[in-house]
Every structure is written in C-alpha cells, then in structure tokens.
Image (cartoon, rainbow over all chains, first blue to last red; front, side, top):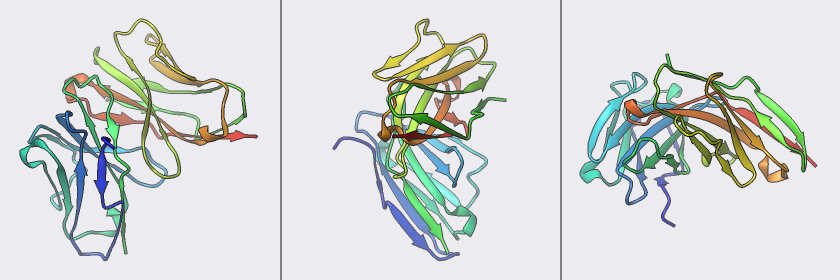
Length: 114
Length: 115
C-alpha cells in the first residue's frame, strides 16, 4: 500500500500526558499537511511542510503543539500536557509539488483525553 | 475572509436516484481549487473530485460531477445513481494556491441513501 499512513490509529491518554503521532506521506509528495477534526465539524488546518520546512502554522497550534518533518520524509505531531479539549481526530495529508493538486489523506489518529 | 458554506446538514435520497449537495465559497483570490471529499463512519477522508478555478469544463469522475458556477461562487456535487455505500459525510473544500494549498473545509453534509 503506497498511501498515506498514520500511527497510532487510536490513542487514549490522561490529561497532562504528552502524546506523539506519526505520519508517513506518499513517497513522491513533498507537501505534508496536518488537520484537526472535532466531532460534527469539518477538518481545520493546523500546519504544513514543504520538504523539511514548516511554512505555516495556524493560530490553533498553541505552544503545547509542535510538529517536525526531519529530512522531508515522515512527520511527527507532538502535544504536550494534553487537555480534554485536545480530544479530536488528527488527520495528515500529502500532495505533490503543485498546490493545485488534490491532497491525499491518511486514516487519521483519534485522540481521547480522559 | 475565505469560507466554505454547506447549508444542508443532512440529506436523504432514494437508492438509484441522483442527489445534489450544495457548496458555496467565498474568496477574492483568482487562483484556487475546489474539492469534494467523502468521509464514511471509519473516519478516512476519500478524495472524490477536483475543479480548478481556471477550468472551463465541469469536472466529472464516474458517478460524481461538479457543477461549477464561478459567477455564483458555487461548486455543487452531483451524485448520479445513488448506492447504499454512498451513505457518508461529504465535505466541500477550497485550496488557495497562494497560501500553500491548505484546505478550508465546510461543515459537511450527511447523506443517507434509502433502499
């Protein structure tokens, strides 16, 4: 399977703990995007990378959130000191060089903070 | 401000009939793309169809077609010959080419196909 993969698919954590999610994009895609989707809402943009450079961060991405994409391959999204409001589906997508191309999404990581 | 509006929270359609899901968008940019994604209960976002702002022909992909009316800023999705497997959430999204291609999504429409 050469699609976008995300790990883990589900994560349950206690408030105050740190969590890290991983995204592996389609290999020839140099753009990688992170989105967050809460129940009953459309996904909201968090951040995106072109190769290893993080080019934009949404105001939704508080200081507790950090994302990396070392060597322009896989990406990680870390949430420190989780809060109940962080409970959501975290979606990763990748696309080829041109921004006009469609974004291919991974299966998502569902985070539940208790 | 850039925005996508989907005014139909839920829709019902009889199996084998056609259905139109509405989407309007707001942007002052000239270069953008419009997308429709399907999200079944499993949560994965499945790409359905794409329309570029400079495309003169309406996009079609199998049973899916996008009714693009640029002057009205609408990009409605038409699904022909509905199937039970079409029951899902459908999201309209816009990509702004001068903003790195990030997607702005609407609130979604939940489609239920009746047998």
